[in-house]
Image (cartoon, rainbow, N blue to C red; front, side, top):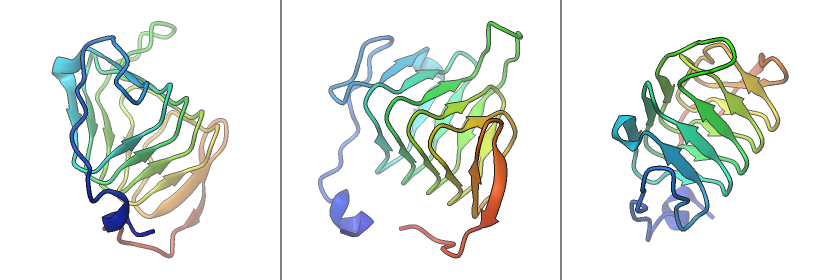
Length: 139
């Protein structure tokens, strides 16, 4: 199934602060949250947008992920940006101030505490770049 077929009936979800969407993911601080077109966010994902979270078009986020623009453990703060076409595997954590580049892939169970460039695959705890991607464009 192509991205075009998969998202042919896509609509922006109703998002209320701190309340699960019909897809069972949650955003806190929705005034600082920007959601792109044809995104896919997995169930039980938590997004804390206190300092801003931007998810661009065609982004996929697996289930059980956590995206933080603020960390109360070490007081880090900063906007998180998930660029067009990036994909984040389930159970991954994205920390404050991180940008994940266009078409980048983050493997499941990764801890992302540094920026990830475009068109790479990154995995691990902490995340490290595994390889450059062959596929440069996602619809």
